[in-house]
Length: 360
Image (cartoon, rainbow, N blue to C red; front, side, top):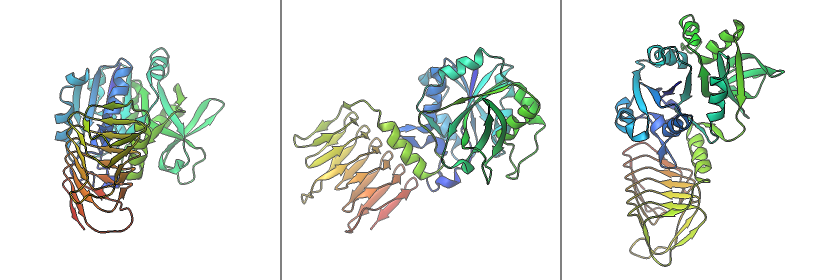
């Protein structure tokens, strides 16, 4: 059995974060979100994975994952020149799949439950497809499955008036039969070949489709709020680890990870859950600012310097410099960004693309 990770798309709802790279490389708890997908696939025993790339920053995907050896898998790259839909992307992998059953994972989906049992059930079944569903509060954002007596009746892509709250997650178990269906699909109103339309066609042709329900945490990280929520959920489950250095009066509460060679200076409180990467500095300024508080629900990437700033419920990526008298909350600050804020007032919210410079 083989695996496929979809790593394309424009990520328009996440701009400016996606102006310089794919959304699937944005970090959640200091790890690219698509790496969670890769780890989930590897955990099932699948070690041959195709990553479908296209759009801005495809080279960054190749640079990060390479041939897959350092992740314990073998990676093949498949180019999707234009964003023509999930079904179109899957169709490009026909040669890679080579008549085997396969698992498809959208690279911006975060799931905390192991999918190994779902994969084993599919391997040992005669199902033509298995879809993973999750009950949601906002079903019009997703493809929706109508279910009756344990069977899927139909699947509809982003209905205006949903008749079900079972969202089709971005995880699919498929047989090569799906390629023939995709070959005969017509583009949707979005001018894309929809995987939900392909699955619905399988149903109408009386093929054998099953479903499994995810009852643990699942998130389609399509918006900044989604990413912040996923970040908070993932770091809830971290194991304490402190490999840096700290002054004697530093206060640490809750679950906290501090990476190698990071320095936490005097007058700092870290309120977990918090992850601080390697080679970071958490400082107070030279005039003796009052206590700095980092957290909760905050991740700080490698090589970042945080000075005089209170930060909560935020993601600070790698190589950032932040010196802010006012607090920062509910923010995502991309790699190589700088904030210098000497203004007083309430907490500020930032959504900054890579290399941003802010002076207030």
